Amino acid sequence: MIDDEQPGDDGQVHLRLYVAGQTPKSLAAIANLKRLCEEHLAGRYTIEVVDLQVTPQLAAGDQIVAVPTLIRRLPPPLRRVIGDLSNAERVLVGLDMRPRLSTP
Image (tube, rainbow, N blue to C red; front, top):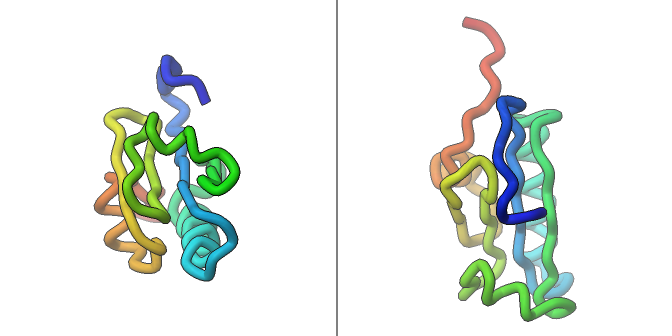
């Protein structure tokens, strides 16, 4: 992902999830995020998982102070949610993600 990317009219949501290794909380956050995205953003999202045990230098760029932390990078502005992402409503509100409408 490049910081100077401009979101188009395609409705794509770019997410970056920071975790620390393969802990139960990290694994739960990954699974919860994938489920949430499939339910509410099917076909309109990309997820980048950053393991801070492998690449700790990436934490400074997004000012990560706790893990797991999810950041919505596109569309702007940046939004973040900290935790295992088990509360779907909190994640949707926190990231200002709009689920696809099924019927009017």
